[in-house]
Image 1 (tube, one colour):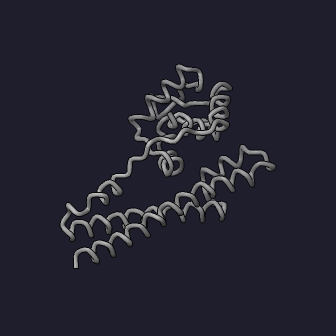
Image 2 (spheres, helix red, strand yellow):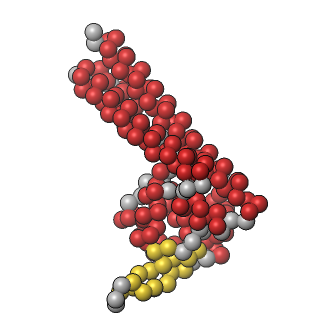
Image 3 (tube, rainbow, N blue to C red):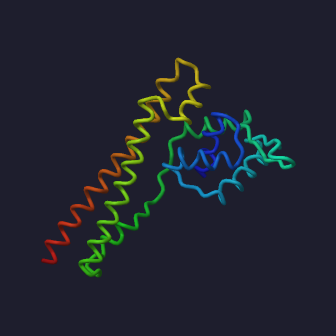
Length: 193
C-alpha cells in the first residue's frame, strides 16, 4: 500500500502526468520504493476513483492529450494520516542472505562470485545515494528544489534534513552489506583453502 503514499508525496510537490510521475519516481522515491509503470498507472486510476486525486486531460502534441493528476484535499488528508501512523514492519525477504545460509552447497568460486556481485551491487547503490546527499547539501536536487518552492521557509530546513536523513540510512545499509559480503569472502577462503 506504500505505493499510493509515495505517489501522493510526489504529487504534493506539483501536479504531474503518469509519465512524469514515473520519471520522477525512478530518480527520487524509487530509491526507497520500487514500482514499475505497470503498477503506477493502475494505482493512479484507483486513487482517482477513490477521490484522492483529481485527473484532468491536458493537450499533448498536435491532437493528443494526457492525464495530469492533482492531489485532492482527501488525498492530502490520507497522506498526512499515513505519515502520522506508526508503520507495521513487513517480514523480510533477503535472497542474498538466504543463499549465504546454504553457501556450503555452492562451489567455492560460485560462492565468491556471489559475494563479489553483492559488493558490486551495493557499491553502486552507495555511489548513487552519496550523489543524492551531495545534491541535497549543494541545493542542486531538481525534485527537492521544486518541493522547497512550495514549502514555507520555516519548514525548508526540516524538509531538507529529513530528505538527507533518508538517504543516509540507505548509505548505512549499503555500507553494512558491503562489509558483510567482504566478511563472506574471507569466510569462503578460510573454509576452502
